[in-house]
Image (cartoon, helix red, strand yellow):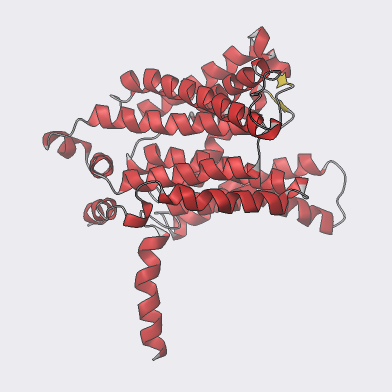
Length: 353
């Protein structure tokens, strides 16, 4: 009955409160207030930016790996495309300003332009990779996406104007918590709207039984390519945001290990659950800081970053092994928080009475 449960989850529809432009109008002032509150704490700003980028990556990959049931392990490649192209765009526009606007607002306008350039380039790469490869299934698709990620990394390492192995520096650090939060909000909204639409129901059908979906007249390749393009676009935007709040980007930031970190977030949260992807991304983003604090508490100051990096991936592995043994479907499975809470509250009240 897993198929029926998953399809019913996709058929739940989009609440009226998530339709139209109202959610954006509500989110913008909240993000601006959050930016103002965190303006005095650079560390909190950086940490929230890292968490936001990871949430964007996890939720966007969940559209392909979770909703569509494919297995892509090259998400860091699309992130790299967005990071480098948006960084190059910002470097070209660094000395340009819109005279009619304040400098801070002008910088944000050019940042959005750079992010759109990076996201569009990543979406184009997603289309070029996805159109031939998404006719494949299972392990074959994983091999193709892995190869794409490695090709991008090697190209960057051997391209002069991208900084080769030394990386690209000097990118204007114009990203902010409000900008990262806006794109987090946007990718979650898009994922939620897709899941509750007829397009989403087709993706759920492909996930559960691709042969049956084809027999029912679903253009499986077309739907998979669209999902892949949307996922790649947001991965490129995440890379662009990353490039605008770190001092330097280099090929080492976009390796196969980075792709697997994103896959772990999706699997840990539950394939097909946007809420699960968010929770897992937040937890795994905070995990290195928790380990760092633990080492500090035990008086281990030397080469702390190296120790955290060495223990982080084994911890990821142990978490996955424990989760697969205790809860193979992930933390949330295919369900969302808003699907669980309304049913849980009445039962609790009834029990109290």
